Amino acid sequence: MNYDEFFQRNLGIFEPEEQERIKDAKVLIIGCGGIGGVIAIALARSSVGHFVLMEPEVYELSSPADAIRREERTTEPTSISNRTGILRWPVDVAKCYLFWQENGTDCSNCVAVCPWAFPIRPWL
Image 1 (cartoon, rainbow, N blue to C red):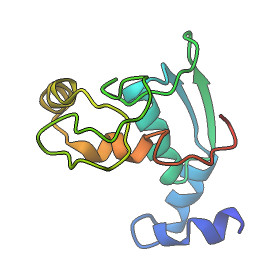
Image 2 (tube, rainbow, N blue to C red):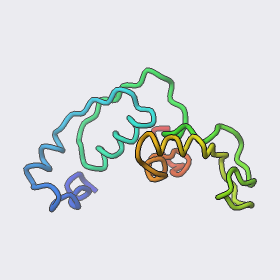
Image 3 (cartoon, rainbow, N blue to C red):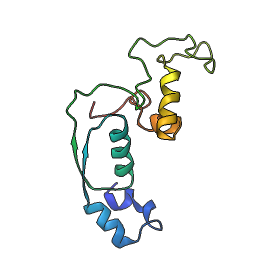
Image 4 (cartoon, rainbow, N blue to C red):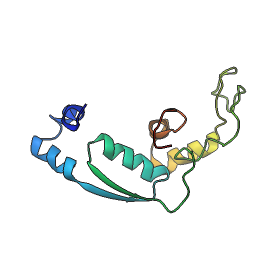
């Protein structure tokens, strides 16, 4: 699938001239952690064509709220909203809630960029 086929869905939201400007746009994102990573993915899905990503830290798998602990997965509930018997990574729900309050969001931002939700990622 080429660029035009992939982003055909944007027509109607963007005029063809606007779509061309977005395709040719160059975006610099400094800091690709929680928020920078979410922004990069949102812009890529909106069809921005060129990125320069700068990250001074070493990349580690994490969630934007840094609420998924880097431990072995467990079938035990990590909060009252979890069911027993489902294999999952332990989640610090207090960190999630604070992230929601600070950013006016919910689980959707974290789910959209979760490295654990999409195991086949060629850049990892």
